[in-house]
Image (spheres, rainbow, N blue to C red):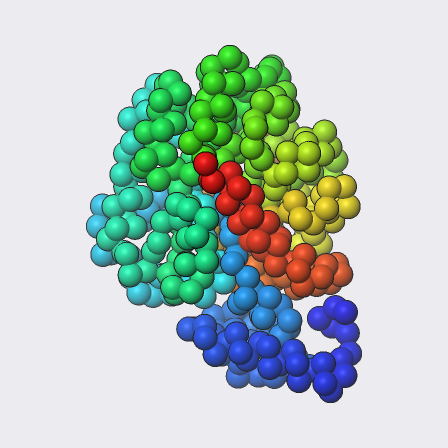
Amino acid sequence: MSAQDPVSRRAFVQLAAGACAALAVTPGIAAPMLNRGRFRLFGSAGRDYSARAIALVQRSVVIDMLAPFTLDFPQQAKWERNPESFTAAQFQKFRDSGINVFHPAIGLGGINAYETALQWFAGWNSFIAGNDERLMRIDSPGDFGRVKGSGKVGVLLGLQNAQHFRRPDDVDLFHGLGQRVAQLTYNSRNLIGNGSTERRDEGLSDFGVAIVERMNRVGMAVDVSHCGDRTTLDAFEVSKKPVLITHSNVRALANGHPRDKADEAILAVKKSGGVMGITGVRMFVRDKEPTTIEHALDHFDYVAKRIGPEHLGVGSDIDLDGYDDMPPELNKQLRAGYKGSYGFRDKIDIEGLDHPKRMYDLTEGLIRRKYTDAQIEGILGGNFRRVLSEIWTV
């Protein structure tokens, strides 16, 4: 039954009751308008959502496996320098999003990758410690349940490049600093392997194999979202634990975009027991206009039909507001940092998935596509929770 279908009086009452129960325990959400089981959320710019969608988001542990806290990088630096500058209103925006756990990984590299990574983890740990009544670092499987009931926002620390691992022992060091996920490469080559836009498509090096093995041993998740095809498949072959694609899409639906994944990699996700997070980045979804939320949902359907919805998740690859709301100069600088093969267009975001309440819009979309409640709860976070709990258990 979709959110738009007529419902019986009994079903209507059940839906409304479920939503009201969820709303009663959630600060910042109210239901001033009831219309065929639909509710308006505060701050949702005229959007209303079905009782079923609201209830699903509110009872799920919602995990976004690629979501920077902000794409306004000077603002992030300010929070890290002065944690008390993170205001109550800013925190409430995160709470109201419905997302319980954010994975704010970025791509760090260069000749000083090790030192830069140390500074990055120091900054985040300072920010979290300075907001311990609001934020919670997600370190262990039990933390997923704890953060849901705490009223806090969870932060799962990781990086979109493993260039800071100079030797296998560095994996242990950074695990001790809170790192729980490491993407093996960003878009270019490092000593571990190749990125998705590198000129040649080569696989894991011997050093890369040693890094993956050490990550398995300490309980750090291997992520291959930006990796080249051969490096991606090598990681699945070498790893003794599930491998993640935290944020990527289906190459067959986006005219061969190099940042998306080929069917061979998608099938490897199932064999590994991993999970693939789908993004709403416009050029990763479709290579022409129009590009809508329905096209993004096609990527969910494609993966679900081939490997099952239990291997699906969300890796939005944006902050709460999206790339198109970045300060113009920062947006220009960001675009300049990528090769032409990225295929930037006027917009990077997709309408409906470019705002703080996007998890509700996504849930409505999954309802339209006839996913069951259990399947939607898995996609919203249950699947990543399950696989991360397995990877982190040593």
